[in-house]
Image (cartoon, rainbow, N blue to C red; front, side):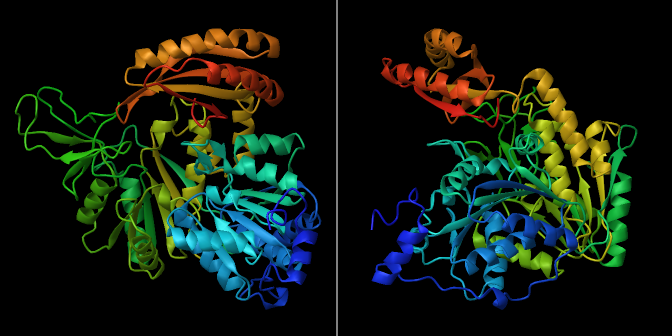
Length: 574
């Protein structure tokens, strides 16, 4: 059986022979004609399916760039249909557990005769093990899961789909660090099968790969059901008095939807009641004792909570430093926004959708059911509501606090902001009703907002790629980070400086630049202090050759007591 399950041997002939011998129970083959409830494809969808299905049996990366609501999922399902008809298996990756149940239900409903296995960390160990074995033995036709499922052995693999391929959740940041998207591409190449990377806002790395011919780009420029894309309007709030963070334009838009019986979503990617509790008298703020971060005020739970290390404490009745009892929340989170909207619209049903409101699968399913059944008029949501959801009565999206990412230190922050806003704006007007998006900003003329208003991802991608080319940022360079943590940051910095000295001969040989060791932006995390050292190479081969030589030295070096280190290739944040 070990030889049978090796994936490098092609898989299919060996498994077929094993089934004849009775070593493996054959999977339930789904009749392609038995697909339940399949809608009629648009011309764009049909052309996409035909182009991709022509590559079955060979390695071909496809970038399916489709606007929100264009029916990318339907294209996936039609390809899966053909894969099952060929007697093969399909692997579908999604970025978050929150998206898995919805897609799982849609896949299972479309293929009632097929065995669908769902794999993610929220499953019980027994259920996850059972699904893993079913996939490994070839008895599951479809495997649907989050990033870890990319390692699932599939002897009859015929297709890989990576939905929302741009999502940062595909990067594993702890333990063995890897990118599930990139690993899926490597695996598709190893097994000679096509891979579909789908997104309304592809990563700039994937977009550049399509520009240079490494991937084949297929675009879905029109929505499948809605007649038009939602209208996007940046709202200038520089000279406007905000009412608890809400402009009059946005409040009037919400009121208009309430009058028509439609739903509104107010997007604020900051959970809790307020980002910080502060004392106006002495300047005390609620800092986390274990991290270089503030404790967030969660008024509903009557707790101060760190969103990085999960440290919790009670809310003080007075300032711990000066005793002032007039301590105040500063800024706003989803809980405070929910309270404000409930006061402004007392007859409306306001529903908050964030990780505090949906801590379990049952709570998440209940929230989705409420929204889908029209039992909520105003939704207050974080990034959990930004992608993958389809609510026909949702016609308005208002976005708060978007400007904070425009000038962030991370060079990827503007790209992620554009992706996030385009994704959350795409929740509006997905049915027959027209949609509208309002983005409150102090920079209404910024190119990012102007491209958003025109739904012009290609233009914004071209601008960003030109900036990165001039700055020699990825995808025009290959990066790696050597990170070290210790009880004190000085210890980490000293070790990194020694590592840098050891790296210089290798760097010169391979044309790699090694930067100085510096503390991380968040120096202290969970009682450990952190520093990093950036390595930049002109391309992937040079970086890999350098890291191979350098890592041997790092492993052979005498360890420093209490210090931990790791190498992160293609770091998500630099």
